Length: 191
Image (cartoon, rainbow, N blue to C red; front, side, top):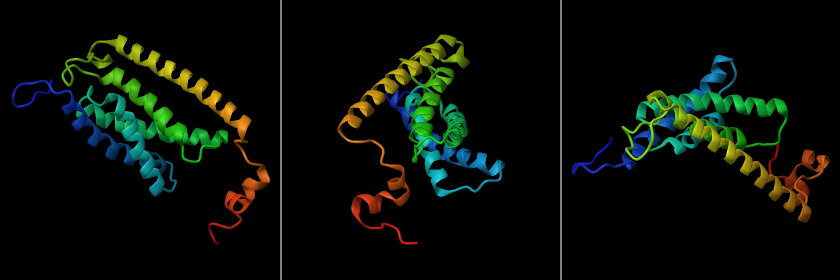
């Protein structure tokens, strides 16, 4: 349990300790996977890895130790990279890997909270799987499933309603030509 100089419990101290530790760990782990498979590492990968680290630690901040946040950062980098590769193979149109990073990374972080949570960090919280409470992982899994279902239904409904007003996708030939030319009448990038 974290206490301040006056002996008052401070759950925010866990947040302050875990957040800075996770993003710098996730960025290199996102880059490490392509290095192992002999692919080029890019600045975008590093940025995506850092964002994935922040996304994954958000549900866990204030409930896990700094050491656990490092493990969460390593894990989310690998998991989000794998999700991004699946998206490429499935040919899904998600240019910024929003689902691979925020959806998969957030779910990973929520589940990792159920594994690593400890009352040593936040006395008002619950113990996780590694501290003898497998029920917390089940609770986190139910929460992830409920949020996933809600998000899928809400997103589908919003896309359906927007598509009634204006098309969500442009024609294939317009997309190939480039939206800058089709919608603005000029070329944004010169070869």
